[in-house]
Image 1 (cartoon, one colour):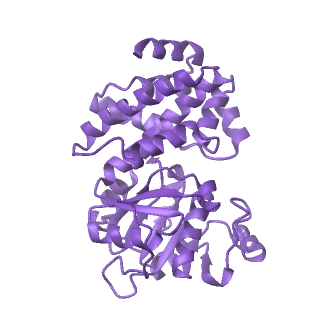
Image 2: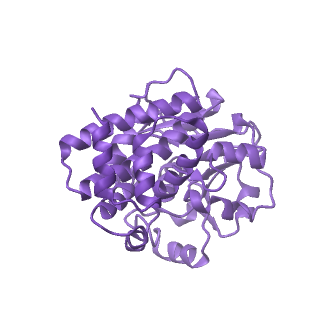
Length: 345
């Protein structure tokens, strides 16, 4: 059941002062999450890499680069470009950086993360490591699984910023901590529920970006809505096959955290990955599409990581293979998608 109940700030780490929350990242999704959290807590820490962005934020009262219509009470925000300062002072850390940059941010750390409550809102995978974020924090920084959570579900930052009704799922091995944070961020426009399927939620968040690129490529090639529906149906089946292999448990792929996120990313005009794919389908090179977008399409990196992971898992994933062939092997999109369509029923 989704909940909209508000709550006071919980001690998510189980320690005194554990309710102090900081945002790590300065993009659109980080800004939307900051809006949600500060609306309840009236105080957050916020790490942004660039001092000039912080100064502009303080002067303007909004993020100078993303979601500029969202205004904040600056007195409620403790900004810093020093990640060590933020990590030392706050007990709950919400990571919202693009996945390709996560390692570079964390390399600056001199403060241990083990005793922090880490929430990842990163819908991507750590390149080179080929790990979803919770696995990365666990293996590299020794954060126990009960102190690791993720935010999933269909949630374009632009719609959250506009306070349009959205449904989020908080995944965590510790059900009480998941519920505490879910209650904290719930509101009239944010409905929440919890899950223990952290790995499944994270992998589905990676795969839906890959499938959104596929949807965009097909749109750029002028395939219609009828085919897009078949593509998304096959994408859901492919996602379920992979999740059932990598993290077998009794999940319902039709839940909004899986299917809902897949559909909104595959169909919405807000979707960076669909936009990126559409440009590829129209004939842009990967590099030219990336330059023109000026924003990260996580699915580009996720495609390569998932292809490498699946070399060991051996799951039948024709859509992933097709997107990989187009982006990395430079196979003509028209030829590759035609081969893909012949495999569908």
